[in-house]
Amino acid sequence: MINPKPSVCIIGGGNAAHALAALLPHQGYETRVFAPYMDQADQINAALLEQDGYMHAEFAPHNQPNGLIKGKPMLVSKNAADVIPLSDVLMMPLPSFTYTSTLTDIKPFLHEGQTLCVTPGQGGFDWIAEDILGSDLLGKI
Image (tube, rainbow, N blue to C red; front, side, top):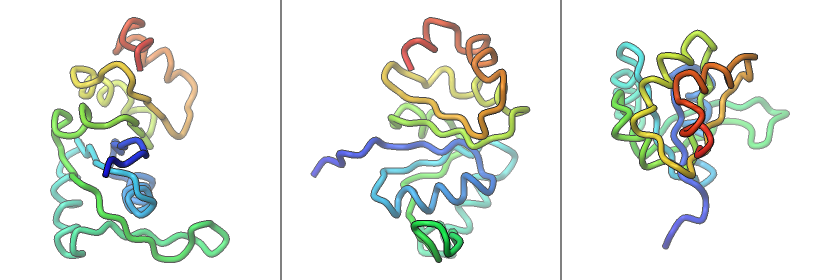
């Protein structure tokens, strides 16, 4: 059966990325993680091995969902080619100082129809994205 939900790639390995990597597969989204910084991908994969392939995140009682959430990302990689082309939605929960290097890393693997989401929404992302990706590619994603 085909999953009617879009496939998602979470870009990064920080706290927000960890929460999303548990939440999105828990909610039925085909989820991959691109963790290009230092040894983040190796650390995340090691933790997944210890947790039967599941990412764990604890959500506060006032959130929905709440409590311990477990989700199983399909793949965690340091290589953009492994995860970016296969994803419909790219989520970048990253600090603004990483935007330039991250966009440079993923640019060769972007294609028409993908959606790029950035959080937190720091001012200037649009300018950085247009500078790195160019207006033609940016207009297609």
